[in-house]
Image 1 (tube, rainbow, N blue to C red):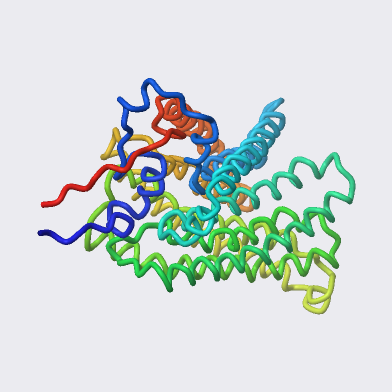
Image 2: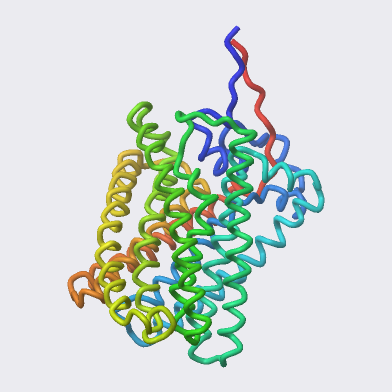
Length: 404
């Protein structure tokens, strides 16, 4: 008799299992005859929500962020960005309410969700969505609100940074202690526990210009520290991912959208470095003693960002080609990875174009913005269709494994 499979650790399950297992696609099969004539209560449907659902809010907030930075603007574009921001906030609150129903009705499910070798990897998407909301609150609210909003977002920044550094330590420790995952099962989702703390640098680059020098400098120092932590952890993961691709080939078609996650760390690091360098308070503290440091750091940040952006673009190309040759494949929540990592790629390209005063690069950034919005609409249609056709938010029944 063949040895029993371990679905959560197999190479075709590590990422897709979170997108499919918890949504009723991989390893599970709906009993259509049993459910067709029965009524399923809303509470039972909400129990199917997992942490992976927050990839939806990550991407929706990302669209709002990229619209706020698009260089070629038209009347009403800012309003459209605000609509995406408010939509993101509403979806975020609804998902919190929905997943709370799951954890309240099944108290043990919360602990299991944080120790599961795949679902736990998507817990950071809740925090990534929060970082986007903090950034958007200042981006869209700053021009019309008083200094109270600046102080509020500053407090949120430090609170978020403290919690996410604990998150990065805790989740990786759980994986080190319990999971014993193999290189064959490696996916870019292994980067996700370091993603929230890394995005502290991106948040700092957006909030720092609004703060006075006394508050701005500590925020920038913290942002550089946290961005470097997240980037270096992700950098250490990349050799495992490349080794997995070289030794075992491309992931299963349904898993391939998750390959875009690898685009995120270098892209958001590129974006954060430029933003933080431009927010340096000249003539204050260290920069008063070293007046040339600000201009040197801005130049260094720009060219280092260009250097890093190339890595992000390479991962984008590999992921895009891998997905195109696998079309069509069934929808799962991993499709939202088409959006959020590429938001970083797009906004970083725009910032580089602004620094170089290159109209060509800025037009590329605007074109990428249009493609991202189109892709968001495309994924949303399939997401809603999956809910309507009971592939998502519908009770599932585990399929008995066949023994040889």
